[in-house]
Length: 206
Image (cartoon, rainbow, N blue to C red; front, side, top):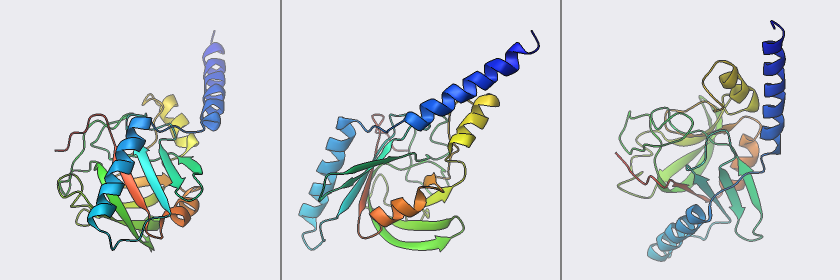
């Protein structure tokens, strides 16, 4: 009997790893529709802005262990999916609460414009400008950026499973955090004037 539990954990972790590796990503049609509407409205109100070449949509209705951020090439239609963390006070496995308040350690919803790429405390990162005064207008003041994090990884998910926290990646202080493996690709796709739209069916901001 003593050997049954370790064998069970071994099988569970291996099956979990396979499932995570097979995750090809998904963002709901509702999230994508709302995101494009917001971007088009922004471009309509700001005709001097150059149309972006890429657009990222984050679907916070999905659990954090899944690839819930899609980057869409607006010229070719090609889609690439990634895991992305939410703020520690927004929830655990799911992001449920959102805020535009400094020091809230919550994620913000709405449309962001991607600014410059830089190297900071978390390595390669992208500065972001919140374009919704109510939902994310304090993004710059809160130092909300897109950066890399070691806690956005399959090993971290499996560690959380073993230690009883469930299959979730780590959480940020409100920033969009992606894996160290993906950061270069994500930055390359978004840095030149891209947009990010964070969506949730909850749609509540504190």
